[in-house]
Image (cartoon, rainbow, N blue to C red):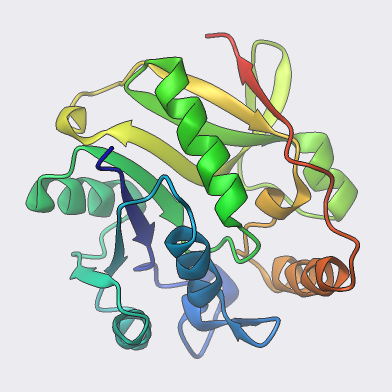
Length: 218
């Protein structure tokens, strides 16, 4: 189907005040970026993987090349600007955009998201989790949205029609995912601690409940 996964790994990580690059933070014995690339490599719906880096993340770029995926350096201005830069410069069409802050993502989750995008027949799909799920895990959401009466948190995954990336506002579907693994977006030290705990919980045979998805009508 020609779907490209674009991993956004160029942020400065200023909120965590790190001395090294956030995508290289260790979760379960390997860096977050490696968990994400592994999930994408094993997802049947993904045909190509590109890691978007910036001047802030040179070591992440080196690690991504070691993982045998494509690397693109973006200006590192902000998330949306760097997405547009990558999509336009590479002429990408159907694009799965994944934040490099999601170490617990799996190939099964990726496939489910992409399948929902193709079913929705809209140019964009935004993936969110219920705010109550974040609260239960002890995660503090940066932003929440009321979507038809549901309090939701974006997880950092979107699928878009790249040919329309310059449009001011794309019509989109909202996919609500009831899964702890997607709720853990590492932006603080507390988030990292929760990600490590949940990783070992899953390894010990206590995984999150089965992926539950629901499309919120627009």
